[in-house]
Image (cartoon, rainbow, N blue to C red):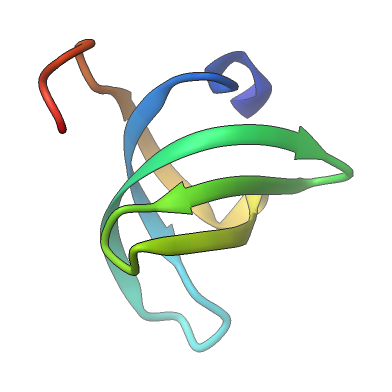
Amino acid sequence: MFSKYVGSTVEIIYMDQSGNFSKRIVEVRSVNNGRAHVYCHKASAPRILIVGNIMAVERIREGAYA
């Protein structure tokens, strides 16, 4: 399901391993074996996220985030 966002910039609500929630804007690079490889704008770095911990996702309009 999340794989449909590959190549897109999306805003997500993510729950980390400790149960803390964060809102992030990420560029989805690939999705494999339940893991999403993204570039996180909050951390200014690549991240690997567990797809099952992504609580919500919304596509960002092209050009709306630089």
